[in-house]
Image: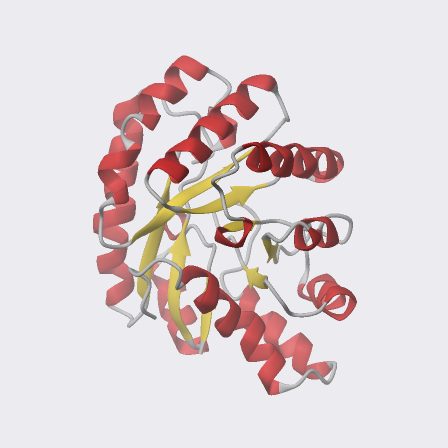
Length: 265
């Protein structure tokens, strides 16, 4: 059994659910994200949040997979603060839904002042409603700077427990920084960017298996909804124990997500 704790199933086919179930997936969590285009109104987000909390859980259940979601406005659409704040007014309504685990994936895209302001305001929402937080870090050359900005911003809110925050898309140069500050970190397994299964296994061998998970973040781009079981195979090939493989792909996600009483894989 495995959990894919970050995958965007609204952009995947029903066949992907079938293949994931056959590979052993028992639960997924789906953060709110950018749809490949900027939405034109808060009503578009409202319908998207309904899709995450009503439609996708039913689609997943047909294959015995439990579906959980996260709610937010993503950093790529946070550059217009006025628009973003209209969307943020919708968030509390959906935090009460039975499959919603917290606020995410919030974070930074281009490390702009507007993105950072909206990020901090969404952290405050998570604080107010006692929610878990899932964070998106920027790509490529902006990742290190963005990761530092994100951690500094969270630490400014002294109510936030870093053990209830998952910082995703870590790579070789950010994983240790995140772990050293007490946060959880996620490794996204993409075919070309972020981490391949081979690089993720390298990182586990460098920094250990505590407070770290693997996910596919499968979406409408070049991605693989079976990336997690493929990483399990790579770890087995390198001689990692069954206990370590299961910890990375099931036990750790269960431990972090289980801090929300709604999560019962």
